[in-house]
Image 1 (cartoon, helix red, strand yellow):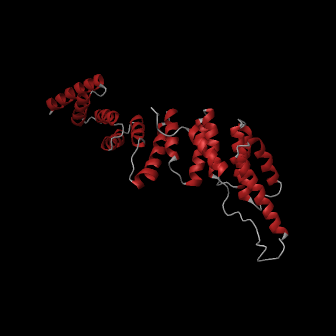
Image 2 (image 1 turned 45 degrees about the vertical axis):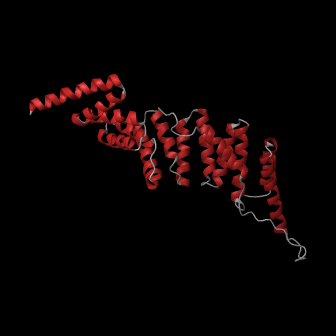
Image 3 (image 1 turned 120 degrees about the horizontal axis):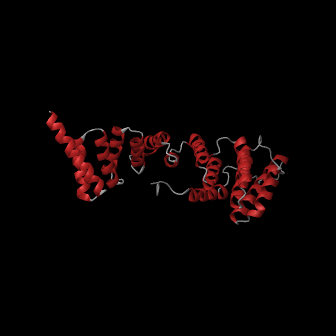
Length: 285
């Protein structure tokens, strides 16, 4: 059911690792006086800042060279020179980078500890939540992964993650939560942009499971109009109309299913049922 709903988290975590490791902090100022224009000596504060800048670049260089065995010690040397109060962004970034190396080395517990320290200082650190979600997903712990993704969404406003959350809720047959997630994804990520994708179909399935047949039928109609799982949607909207006792609409749709060979035996059986119910209605009137 969930094939191609979203990119796999393994690919996503690889992307997050690359972003965290290779991109540094912008705006870090290096004091480099032009000797031809100024003879003033570098102050103690400027020298300290230059040392921090040099140490930070050293960590970035080791990461770019994939010398992961040396990254953590280099990060620790930098951390010894700063406090989280003075340099919260650098401090949290170092712990996050250490967590990335932990993931690469398969040391998940250390990765969690390092992300926790990064988040303690910088609670809005989006990448930390994504990294933790990726680790939990790799473990198959989708409930914990979903909780981390929800935290990520809270701080980032990136509603695309609700597609993952909806898919995971469906896997545990929590259709009420899944419907809520798909609705947030559709309302906040798709429709403002005028886009349509499989979320409409999966929300329709959730509505169907929750016995909200009118809502399900509307979503399946959207899918048909936008060629999203068209065959499945045509059969499902016909089924919704049977459950709503709208046998006339259902008959027309099941005739289309039979013509197209969609779930042929079931469609024929439902079509016969529709004909019988319409005949009965006519007799009663």
